[in-house]
Image (cartoon, rainbow, N blue to C red; front, side, top):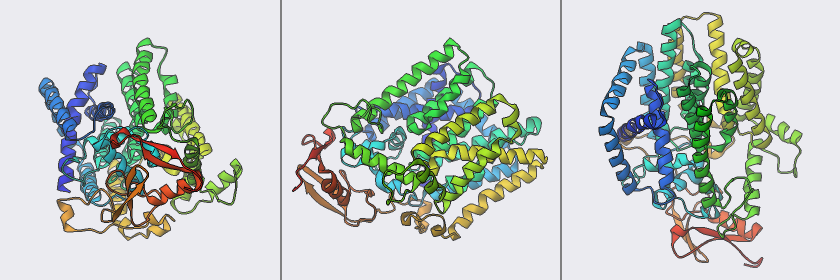
Length: 560
């Protein structure tokens, strides 16, 4: 816990100067110190992603980054001092109950981050993706080795820049920092709104979902950042003055979301309303949107051979391009995973898919039915009835959800809608009945604390059929100082296997078809290699004798 707390302090000290520089570069005039930190996170993510094209993100890049931030700090020392002073003033000004809420989140977040990661995606590609970035940067055709590595996100690059891999394999907890930063922002904005006009604003209720957020914070998943920052995006769109400065902030928040996960793209429809045919606004969106698009296209082209990955549009004619049949395999698998489609159906119709989606069990059913109810209930919320911005946002959320419903409606993809509509409904209900603010604060504290404690006594088998998500973590005193390793399968044994010119490491225990845990590079499950050899007649091979030159898929005979 102590080591993680120190890593968060380091991250904060990097992001504040970087954010202040970003404000200067983009000519943004804002007194919102937390938005400045979010801008710093985005700029670190942006800069490290550019570096990944040319360098491995190891200690040398960290040192150069550190020296640049030191230079920024001397240049903007007065602004940094003022920012820290204002943040301190905010934290001292908020109510005692709110201080207790934030303290609770801080302690529980450290405790959770000190445990082994919960999400199974961590064991299939998060750890390995970050490891490749730490040791090689972006690698040509990396997805030929393990198809999930094609999902490399700039968020993983950001984590690679601050996981201190040059001396430990126990820190991949940037999501814990993001949750804490977001919590401070949500609470302080709620308090300001309430003290100004007694408003019971929806932004203060986002933390009631902490029991959900906490399942993400000890793994480097971009999903949590999407959920949290999207709420800030909605808040700025709905509640902030429609000025050029705020337009730039909304643009950068959206571009950050788009940068780390393309599924959020439909939220860009907000700018149809926001641009006002203003040349400054349009040029700002176009210039920086184009920069983000170029980096994403180049990143995808290098790792998969498809600039528009996961779409097979405009593929590169290179030796490292993923075979089309493999791309189709993973696309079909992802779609089936969203619907949990019965394998007995071949090429099922949309109606069969939707029926299957509605019949999912456990936590999936809760969120699937919940989002439908929330969209219907949203039609009766007064703000959606009377305020044009709320109507526009609701239409965009519905559009985004429909796209997901027709492609891969995993509930984690529509959590931004679910969280926003839920907290807006709660806020509207409490406002209608004119609830006392202190009672609300105490209720928030109870809603945050009780689930975080009770979750340890819940049988996960009632929430998910996935056996890999039914395991609970063990606790030990050493976690107060040192967190657990970055993989829950850190002790698993690996074997060295030769496949043509490729020597790779495979877990001896086949705990998961895509599972690789924290094996030495290159690492892939032998079962996965054998599967693609048997059914697709391909196997991954090195492009040259140098591992950093990447991989290609070699066609093999049916007898091989």
